[in-house]
Length: 293
Image (cartoon, rainbow, N blue to C red; front, top):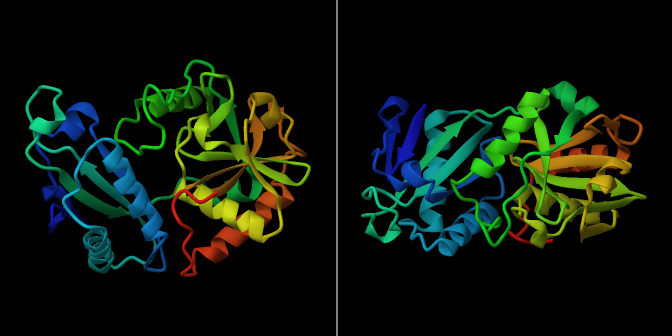
Protein backbone atom coordinates (compact mmCIF):
# COMPACT_ATOMS: atom_id res chain seq x y z
CA UNK A 1 0.00 0.00 0.00
CA UNK A 2 1.23 3.47 -0.89
CA UNK A 3 0.44 6.75 0.84
CA UNK A 4 0.22 10.14 -0.88
CA UNK A 5 2.30 12.53 1.23
CA UNK A 6 2.84 16.16 0.25
CA UNK A 7 2.63 15.46 -3.47
CA UNK A 8 4.46 12.12 -3.57
CA UNK A 9 3.34 8.51 -3.48
CA UNK A 10 5.50 6.71 -0.90
CA UNK A 11 5.51 3.26 0.62
CA UNK A 12 3.48 2.87 3.79
CA UNK A 13 6.58 2.42 5.97
CA UNK A 14 8.11 5.59 4.50
CA UNK A 15 5.04 7.75 5.17
CA UNK A 16 6.32 9.77 8.11
CA UNK A 17 5.65 13.21 9.55
CA UNK A 18 7.67 15.18 12.07
CA UNK A 19 7.09 14.82 15.81
CA UNK A 20 6.91 18.64 15.76
CA UNK A 21 3.85 18.60 13.48
CA UNK A 22 1.01 20.42 15.24
CA UNK A 23 -1.46 17.84 13.97
CA UNK A 24 0.30 15.37 16.26
CA UNK A 25 1.13 17.76 19.09
CA UNK A 26 -2.23 19.53 19.36
CA UNK A 27 -4.75 17.85 17.05
CA UNK A 28 -4.51 20.99 14.91
CA UNK A 29 -5.80 20.03 11.48
CA UNK A 30 -8.75 18.78 9.50
CA UNK A 31 -9.64 15.57 7.72
CA UNK A 32 -12.15 13.71 5.60
CA UNK A 33 -13.12 10.05 5.36
CA UNK A 34 -14.22 9.22 1.81
CA UNK A 35 -15.44 5.94 0.32
CA UNK A 36 -14.61 4.43 -3.04
CA UNK A 37 -17.14 2.14 -4.72
CA UNK A 38 -16.12 0.33 -7.89
CA UNK A 39 -13.08 2.63 -8.25
CA UNK A 40 -15.38 5.67 -8.19
CA UNK A 41 -14.87 8.23 -5.42
CA UNK A 42 -18.13 8.79 -3.54
CA UNK A 43 -19.39 12.39 -3.31
CA UNK A 44 -15.95 13.96 -3.89
CA UNK A 45 -17.26 17.51 -4.29
CA UNK A 46 -19.17 17.46 -1.01
CA UNK A 47 -16.25 15.97 0.89
CA UNK A 48 -13.75 18.46 -0.53
CA UNK A 49 -16.13 21.36 0.09
CA UNK A 50 -16.39 20.29 3.74
CA UNK A 51 -12.61 19.90 4.01
CA UNK A 52 -12.02 23.44 2.73
CA UNK A 53 -14.85 24.80 4.88
CA UNK A 54 -13.30 23.19 7.98
CA UNK A 55 -9.85 24.53 7.09
CA UNK A 56 -11.21 28.02 6.55
CA UNK A 57 -12.94 27.97 9.94
CA UNK A 58 -9.63 27.28 11.71
CA UNK A 59 -7.64 29.57 9.37
CA UNK A 60 -5.63 26.72 7.92
CA UNK A 61 -4.42 27.17 4.34
CA UNK A 62 -4.58 23.97 2.30
CA UNK A 63 -1.62 24.03 -0.12
CA UNK A 64 -3.53 22.23 -2.89
CA UNK A 65 -6.65 22.94 -4.91
CA UNK A 66 -9.71 20.74 -4.88
CA UNK A 67 -8.75 19.52 -8.35
CA UNK A 68 -5.24 18.60 -7.22
CA UNK A 69 -6.54 16.66 -4.22
CA UNK A 70 -9.08 14.83 -6.36
CA UNK A 71 -6.32 13.90 -8.81
CA UNK A 72 -4.20 12.67 -5.89
CA UNK A 73 -7.01 10.43 -4.67
CA UNK A 74 -7.45 8.98 -8.14
CA UNK A 75 -3.70 8.37 -8.23
CA UNK A 76 -3.99 6.39 -4.98
CA UNK A 77 -6.80 4.24 -6.40
CA UNK A 78 -4.78 3.49 -9.52
CA UNK A 79 -1.66 2.66 -7.50
CA UNK A 80 -3.53 0.35 -5.13
CA UNK A 81 -5.57 -1.45 -7.78
CA UNK A 82 -8.46 -2.08 -5.34
CA UNK A 83 -12.05 -1.48 -6.47
CA UNK A 84 -13.58 -0.63 -3.09
CA UNK A 85 -11.89 1.20 -0.24
CA UNK A 86 -11.69 4.20 2.02
CA UNK A 87 -9.64 7.41 1.94
CA UNK A 88 -8.40 9.28 4.96
CA UNK A 89 -7.48 12.73 3.64
CA UNK A 90 -5.67 14.76 6.31
CA UNK A 91 -4.31 18.31 6.38
CA UNK A 92 -2.35 19.28 9.49
CA UNK A 93 -1.08 22.68 10.53
CA UNK A 94 2.42 21.38 9.84
CA UNK A 95 5.77 21.56 11.56
CA UNK A 96 6.16 24.20 14.26
CA UNK A 97 7.67 24.63 17.69
CA UNK A 98 6.34 23.50 21.07
CA UNK A 99 4.25 26.64 21.43
CA UNK A 100 0.56 26.81 20.56
CA UNK A 101 0.80 29.60 17.98
CA UNK A 102 -0.43 28.02 14.74
CA UNK A 103 0.99 30.80 12.59
CA UNK A 104 4.52 29.86 13.50
CA UNK A 105 4.19 26.57 11.62
CA UNK A 106 6.11 26.56 8.35
CA UNK A 107 3.48 25.01 6.04
CA UNK A 108 0.64 22.51 6.16
CA UNK A 109 1.25 18.78 5.89
CA UNK A 110 -1.12 16.89 3.59
CA UNK A 111 -1.47 13.14 3.25
CA UNK A 112 -3.94 10.62 1.84
CA UNK A 113 -4.25 7.03 3.03
CA UNK A 114 -6.24 4.57 0.90
CA UNK A 115 -7.14 1.37 2.71
CA UNK A 116 -9.96 -1.05 3.45
CA UNK A 117 -12.71 -0.24 5.95
CA UNK A 118 -15.36 -2.57 7.34
CA UNK A 119 -17.14 -1.27 10.42
CA UNK A 120 -20.02 -3.70 10.74
CA UNK A 121 -20.82 -7.24 9.68
CA UNK A 122 -23.46 -8.23 7.11
CA UNK A 123 -25.45 -9.76 9.96
CA UNK A 124 -25.60 -6.41 11.76
CA UNK A 125 -27.00 -4.72 8.66
CA UNK A 126 -29.61 -7.47 8.48
CA UNK A 127 -30.53 -7.56 12.19
CA UNK A 128 -29.54 -4.15 13.53
CA UNK A 129 -27.23 -3.15 16.37
CA UNK A 130 -27.37 -2.21 20.04
CA UNK A 131 -26.09 1.15 21.30
CA UNK A 132 -26.11 3.12 24.53
CA UNK A 133 -26.73 6.75 25.38
CA UNK A 134 -23.60 8.26 26.91
CA UNK A 135 -23.93 9.11 30.58
CA UNK A 136 -20.43 10.32 31.46
CA UNK A 137 -19.68 12.41 28.36
CA UNK A 138 -21.61 15.15 26.58
CA UNK A 139 -20.95 16.64 23.17
CA UNK A 140 -18.78 19.72 23.38
CA UNK A 141 -20.88 22.80 22.71
CA UNK A 142 -20.44 25.00 19.66
CA UNK A 143 -19.02 27.70 21.92
CA UNK A 144 -16.31 25.22 22.97
CA UNK A 145 -15.49 23.51 19.67
CA UNK A 146 -17.43 24.15 16.47
CA UNK A 147 -19.01 20.76 15.60
CA UNK A 148 -19.25 21.71 11.92
CA UNK A 149 -15.44 21.57 11.71
CA UNK A 150 -14.19 18.05 11.03
CA UNK A 151 -10.99 18.55 12.98
CA UNK A 152 -8.30 16.20 14.22
CA UNK A 153 -9.41 16.93 17.78
CA UNK A 154 -11.62 13.87 18.41
CA UNK A 155 -11.03 13.40 22.13
CA UNK A 156 -14.67 14.22 22.95
CA UNK A 157 -15.81 11.42 20.64
CA UNK A 158 -13.12 9.03 21.87
CA UNK A 159 -14.19 9.43 25.49
CA UNK A 160 -17.76 8.57 24.47
CA UNK A 161 -16.44 5.59 22.47
CA UNK A 162 -14.61 4.32 25.56
CA UNK A 163 -17.91 4.38 27.45
CA UNK A 164 -19.65 2.25 24.82
CA UNK A 165 -16.71 -0.18 24.58
CA UNK A 166 -16.91 -0.62 28.35
CA UNK A 167 -20.65 -1.34 27.92
CA UNK A 168 -19.94 -4.00 25.29
CA UNK A 169 -21.56 -2.23 22.33
CA UNK A 170 -20.14 -0.65 19.18
CA UNK A 171 -21.71 2.81 19.22
CA UNK A 172 -22.91 5.47 21.61
CA UNK A 173 -25.38 8.32 21.24
CA UNK A 174 -24.16 11.63 22.63
CA UNK A 175 -26.27 14.42 24.11
CA UNK A 176 -25.58 18.13 23.93
CA UNK A 177 -25.55 20.53 26.87
CA UNK A 178 -29.34 20.87 26.67
CA UNK A 179 -29.83 17.12 27.01
CA UNK A 180 -30.86 16.51 23.40
CA UNK A 181 -29.37 13.77 21.26
CA UNK A 182 -26.93 15.23 18.76
CA UNK A 183 -24.88 12.43 17.17
CA UNK A 184 -23.10 9.16 17.75
CA UNK A 185 -19.35 8.99 18.33
CA UNK A 186 -18.74 8.70 14.60
CA UNK A 187 -22.14 8.81 12.91
CA UNK A 188 -25.26 10.92 12.52
CA UNK A 189 -28.50 9.80 14.17
CA UNK A 190 -31.98 9.38 12.68
CA UNK A 191 -35.27 8.16 14.12
CA UNK A 192 -38.57 7.32 12.43
CA UNK A 193 -41.88 8.07 14.11
CA UNK A 194 -45.25 7.75 12.39
CA UNK A 195 -43.61 7.56 8.97
CA UNK A 196 -41.63 10.78 9.50
CA UNK A 197 -37.83 10.63 9.29
CA UNK A 198 -36.32 12.87 11.98
CA UNK A 199 -32.74 13.90 12.70
CA UNK A 200 -31.11 16.42 15.06
CA UNK A 201 -30.92 20.00 13.83
CA UNK A 202 -27.56 21.38 12.66
CA UNK A 203 -27.41 23.67 15.70
CA UNK A 204 -27.81 20.70 18.06
CA UNK A 205 -24.05 20.21 17.92
CA UNK A 206 -23.58 17.87 14.98
CA UNK A 207 -21.17 17.42 12.14
CA UNK A 208 -23.06 17.84 8.87
CA UNK A 209 -22.39 14.39 7.50
CA UNK A 210 -22.09 13.87 3.77
CA UNK A 211 -23.95 10.56 4.07
CA UNK A 212 -26.54 12.29 6.26
CA UNK A 213 -27.25 14.74 3.44
CA UNK A 214 -27.52 11.95 0.87
CA UNK A 215 -29.91 9.94 3.05
CA UNK A 216 -32.14 12.97 3.67
CA UNK A 217 -32.18 13.54 -0.09
CA UNK A 218 -33.10 9.90 -0.73
CA UNK A 219 -35.76 9.85 1.98
CA UNK A 220 -37.55 12.78 0.36
CA UNK A 221 -37.22 11.12 -3.05
CA UNK A 222 -38.84 7.99 -1.60
CA UNK A 223 -41.73 10.11 -0.36
CA UNK A 224 -40.92 10.22 3.36
CA UNK A 225 -41.27 13.53 5.23
CA UNK A 226 -37.95 14.63 6.74
CA UNK A 227 -37.59 16.90 9.77
CA UNK A 228 -34.53 18.44 11.38
CA UNK A 229 -35.66 18.86 14.97
CA UNK A 230 -34.75 18.47 18.62
CA UNK A 231 -34.46 14.77 19.47
CA UNK A 232 -34.66 13.91 23.14
CA UNK A 233 -33.45 10.56 24.53
CA UNK A 234 -37.10 9.68 25.14
CA UNK A 235 -37.84 10.27 21.45
CA UNK A 236 -35.22 7.70 20.54
CA UNK A 237 -36.51 5.15 23.04
CA UNK A 238 -40.08 5.59 21.80
CA UNK A 239 -39.22 5.66 18.08
CA UNK A 240 -40.63 3.19 15.58
CA UNK A 241 -37.16 2.92 14.04
CA UNK A 242 -33.68 4.30 14.63
CA UNK A 243 -30.66 4.24 12.35
CA UNK A 244 -27.21 5.74 11.99
CA UNK A 245 -25.50 7.14 8.90
CA UNK A 246 -21.87 7.75 8.11
CA UNK A 247 -19.16 7.24 5.53
CA UNK A 248 -18.08 4.00 7.15
CA UNK A 249 -21.43 2.94 8.57
CA UNK A 250 -23.50 3.81 5.46
CA UNK A 251 -27.04 3.21 6.82
CA UNK A 252 -27.37 0.83 9.76
CA UNK A 253 -30.35 0.14 11.99
CA UNK A 254 -30.31 0.53 15.76
CA UNK A 255 -32.64 -2.02 17.31
CA UNK A 256 -31.73 -1.58 20.98
CA UNK A 257 -30.78 1.50 23.00
CA UNK A 258 -29.55 0.88 26.53
CA UNK A 259 -31.91 -1.91 27.60
CA UNK A 260 -34.87 -0.70 25.49
CA UNK A 261 -35.88 -2.49 22.29
CA UNK A 262 -36.63 -0.06 19.46
CA UNK A 263 -39.88 -0.79 17.62
CA UNK A 264 -40.29 -4.52 17.20
CA UNK A 265 -36.58 -5.15 17.60
CA UNK A 266 -36.04 -5.68 13.87
CA UNK A 267 -34.71 -3.51 11.06
CA UNK A 268 -37.64 -1.25 10.22
CA UNK A 269 -39.17 -0.98 6.74
CA UNK A 270 -38.11 2.64 6.19
CA UNK A 271 -34.56 1.96 7.33
CA UNK A 272 -34.38 -1.06 5.06
CA UNK A 273 -35.70 0.93 2.12
CA UNK A 274 -33.22 3.76 2.70
CA UNK A 275 -30.29 1.34 2.95
CA UNK A 276 -31.30 -0.21 -0.38
CA UNK A 277 -31.71 3.24 -1.94
CA UNK A 278 -28.31 4.31 -0.61
CA UNK A 279 -26.55 1.23 -1.93
CA UNK A 280 -28.03 1.87 -5.35
CA UNK A 281 -27.15 5.57 -5.16
CA UNK A 282 -23.43 4.96 -4.56
CA UNK A 283 -23.16 3.53 -8.07
CA UNK A 284 -24.52 6.69 -9.71
CA UNK A 285 -22.77 9.95 -10.59
CA UNK A 286 -25.34 12.10 -8.78
CA UNK A 287 -23.91 14.49 -6.20
CA UNK A 288 -25.68 16.06 -3.24
CA UNK A 289 -24.14 19.43 -2.31
CA UNK A 290 -22.44 19.65 1.08
CA UNK A 291 -24.75 21.05 3.73
CA UNK A 292 -27.94 20.41 1.75
CA UNK A 293 -30.82 19.39 4.01
